[in-house]
Image (cartoon, rainbow, N blue to C red; front, side):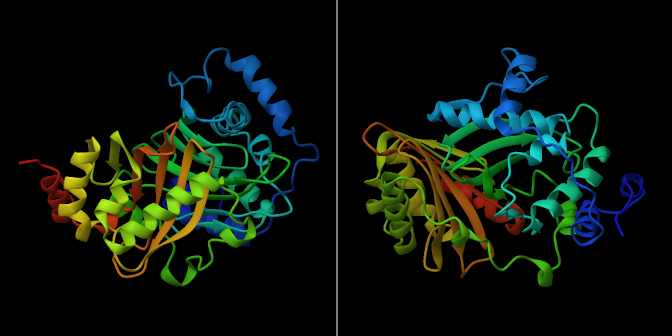
Length: 343
């Protein structure tokens, strides 16, 4: 039985709402969905110079194609408008995967996702917005960095890194979100995440295949291989001289190849995406922007994503690592900060 939106306010968790929506009676789909291309034209006419209405943020598209920036704009406008028919028009009906890699929420059918949104969106604040801050890749595959405002997912804003694949018609056929649950609140994350037995065991990257550009695949594979071996010098040969390294849960930003190498040398044993047991799940993006989803079999953090921006010579000029900081205790995060201090 689907929860009424007011029941969520009385104490039902979002996980309960979404889970029951996915397995309960489906809400009838709209008879005519606005095609994504028409939705984009509508967003342009209403949004003016703003990428998303009511949001004073213009996303960084320096490592994305113009086609991606234009195509995905309407998706975020639709989500901000809580227009689930318009939003769902961006997804493929034939092949569908949406997974939250931090909470374990997952949908493998278009209609189940639409049903969940229909019951969920009325509970959001009237002024809620979802908007991108950075776009990496093209309309084949991309990493979309976006913000959901307070009240949509817990009391604080959530900064997501979405791993997104598109089919040949520009429809989304796989979307996996990664973010740091400490932004959500550790207690809230523990309450909202799926029980262990209900977590997805298959993130369905095999359904879309490896469609990232050959250059991005070479760089991501070489980086992951070097990090798995703990070979920091080999990893650093992939970086530009003035590269920027970011670790989101640790709130670290380190600039220059020499400083990044010094940090990784001291902190490698503590980072979940370095060392034996780490591996590439899926690579996304084009010759300028993208990255890879990774897994870690031997540590407390099971998965994450690393966003990469490449310069004109194919070297990494910005790396952003995202994983669930709720798996790490404050002492580990403090130690990572200490390892970043140069002597």
